[in-house]
Image 1 (cartoon, rainbow, N blue to C red):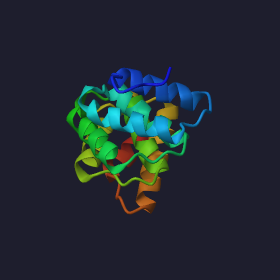
Image 2: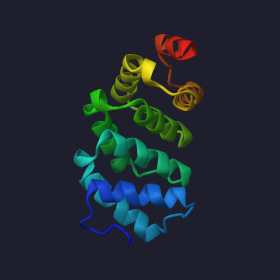
Image 3: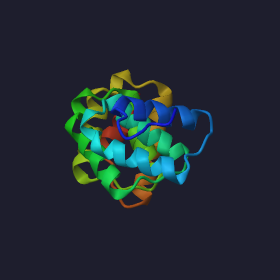
Length: 154
C-alpha cells in the first residue's frame, strides 16, 4: 500500500524506491503525503535510505519540495560518517540529476566520506559519483580536486 500519515522513514524509502524501480510515477496526492511524512521523519532515515530516496525521486523526475530537500541534506550531513560508497554515489547522483545544488556542508561531508572510502568504491559507483560531480560543476558547484584524483586512480 501507499505510505500514510504514520509511515516510518524506512517504509517511505522502500515504497518510493520500489515505485521507481517499477517505473511507476507518484500521483500528486501520494507525493504530497510522502513528502510531508518524509520531512517529519527525516531524522530517522539511515544513510542507505537517504541515498536511495534521493536516487528514486530523481529516477521518477520528482524534485522534492524545499523542506524535504533541506531535511534530507541535513540528515545526510549529520550521518555522513556512516555513508557507504553506494549511499554517497546515489545521493550525489540524485541531487545532480535533479539539478539541486547541495549545501556547502553536505558537499564537503560527502566528498570527505568518498575520499575516506575510495578503496571500497566499485566501478559503477565511481562512474556515478564522478558524473554527479561533473554535472554539479556545470551547475556551479566546484568538486574537490583531491577526490577527483582519487577516483581516477580507483
